[in-house]
Amino acid sequence: MTAIAITMMELGIFGAIKPAIANTSPLSQVDRTATRSLMVEELQGRVTINGRPAQFGDRLGVGDVITTGRRAIAILRVDSNIGVLELAENTTLEIRSLSGQPGLDPNQETVVFISKGRVRSSIARFVSAPFRNSTASHPPQEIAALNWEGIFSQDSQNSEESVETSPFRVETPVTVAGVRGTSFGVDVGPDGKTGISTVEGIVGASAEGQETQINREKSSVVNLNLPPTAPDLTPPLSDLQVFQVTRLSPRRARIVGQVDPMDIVDIDNRAIVTDSEGKFDLIANLPPSRRFRIVVRGPAVREREYSVPVP
Image (cartoon, rainbow, N blue to C red; front, top):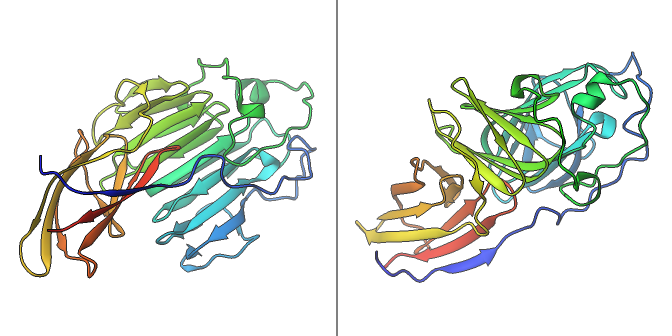
């Protein structure tokens, strides 16, 4: 392995963004005239909805697509106050399904599709089988955006619920993740490879006819045409190993390295394909600074930015 000097900077934590807390109960009475949506609660940098600039307070319905640019972040609040989603930079998310009515509706279903990037979510515990099957009253609850303390401090007991019938689902090109009241993250590489990490609660992942249950502090990876890997403990840091950096010409360089299989890699704002072991081999234009900006981003709380010099 070639010894490379690397400058590292820790980026962000799951609870770093302070949300606006909704004033209404998520379990208010159903308004049959209302339409379900996800509302833009916070924006940073360039964010678009269906190709136009996004604005605070915009509402996304089924079929709408939101995309974040370089160093941009968007936070969406799901109606009925059931959850919050944070989109990292270079992420694209589409609203696939918003069935049922706002408020207390046992038929409510929310499905989003991530084609690239990372989305971190906090979903209320009542979004689970008991909420769907019971008519009993529940006390008001608030969702603290991307904060796993408080109402997310206990795991759901409904592990028998199928991924495909979960009332909140995250789809990617290779898998479906069903959520049972939890804080978790999903990242998607340019080839569809998906990493899933659970911070609190339970996430079920389904691919190629097989399901796996991902419990607290564990992660799983889904590669193209393969079932989810067995859940393993989530590493504490998003590490980058640089095996080789070679200048091929005055304007071109080659970089060879490896990250944890669940992590996604951006090199100078370009999403990089990694194999099932997290390895990559890239030939790219040499930046004017002669340093590659490499962001290694885990599905949930782990993220690091590296500055790798080219000799």
